[in-house]
Image (cartoon, rainbow, N blue to C red):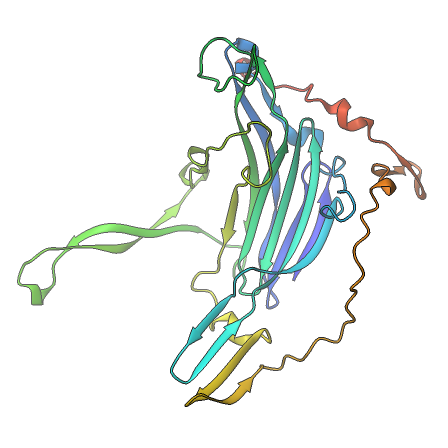
Amino acid sequence: MAHLVATTPQGPRCRKEYKGQRILYELGLQKALDNYAGSDPIHSRTAYPDTCYGFGPFAFGFLNVHGCPAICLFEFDANHLMDRHSTSEYVAATKNVYFTVRSVSTIGNYDYMFSCSFFMDGSITVEARASGYIRAAFFAKNHHYPFQIHDQLSGLLHDHMPNYKADFDILGTENTVQSMGKVPHNTTYPPLRGKVLNTIKWNRSYIENEDEGAKWAEHDIMGDLPTTVFTTAHPRIQFVPTNYLDIGASVEMANMVRTKYQGGVTMDVINFGAYDGTCDLDYEPAVVGLWEHKGDAVVRKFPCSPDDPYYQTGSISQVNRTTKIDRTEQ
């Protein structure tokens, strides 16, 4: 179960339970910053605090049949199974259906798509995607910032840094964060009579503060030319239950099927309580209806007037990234 709220600066935020036990008190975007560098002092000290503009009020819907509304909730059948296994007597498989909360916001020259997907095995995937147009600067006859894109223009070296908050409450609120991983290990065993083996072992250490966390900012370099697209500007992180479940989640689902066979004959089919779907299918082709898209409707807050919306898209261009952080003053 996931509870969804939305805030003005960060947009949607989720609270997650699994089998009635709270796992995440809060999961959502906390801060977003764009850090620029260029061949002149203006661009080299420019940073845009995107959350100051507000991902909530600048969430805009997609065109009809081209995506989903500003905030959308949907289930999806993944392009791979959750698990499967074949033996000499049976084959079993579990479909991988997951639930996604997605929002899209336009901040200046970029559109940001944020997705939070909840899987039946308890894992959670958080994704951020960006699409839009780069900011350009004067080409200074060098390739440090980094590419020439026109006669006298170059792109600007920059980072998009969405910072997510994941406040875990696992078996209570008194939690610690432990890092676990494989490390090289040289050891010997009594039967080997002193011979050393090069192997691996499990290493555990506790993370005391944010400085000891994973340094994702040091990885994942991609290009923004000629335009930024959702398919490549796509960082993601996955939260996976480790040593938490008493039994594999897939064997408890109605999404699992098992077929028993022997000697080329099907002996039994087990569907674990699932039944054939009863929903009527709509075979009519989707109507694009692009002429019906008028922009996003705005509801007056003071006084609240949900029955009398008006259309306002000028605020998209008005943002135009006019707010900057002067790093020399930090």
